[in-house]
Image (tube, rainbow, N blue to C red; front, side):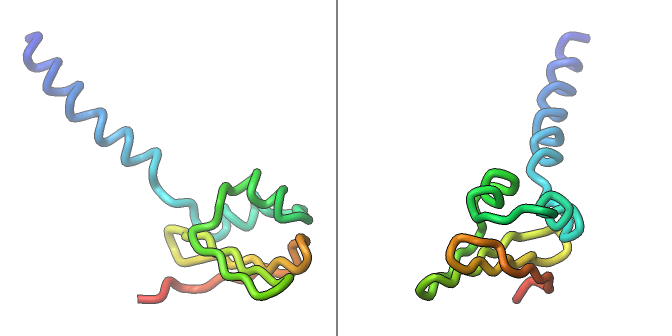
Length: 89
């Protein structure tokens, strides 16, 4: 009996960890970012981006979603635009 419980406990941990690590959907990311105006607010709400591209005062922050990507364009520290797309293969 005890051995069976240890085996079940050992199997449930990886399943629980996998559930915690799943990426949000594009809609969930956009919902969390609604109303945010600065890159500091964006990073606080979503964490650091998976990809960051910079060109002068222009930044593109890319977040991976379970169903694609969400890209935020930031100009001079302000969130100016968001867009969604599919992941590139």
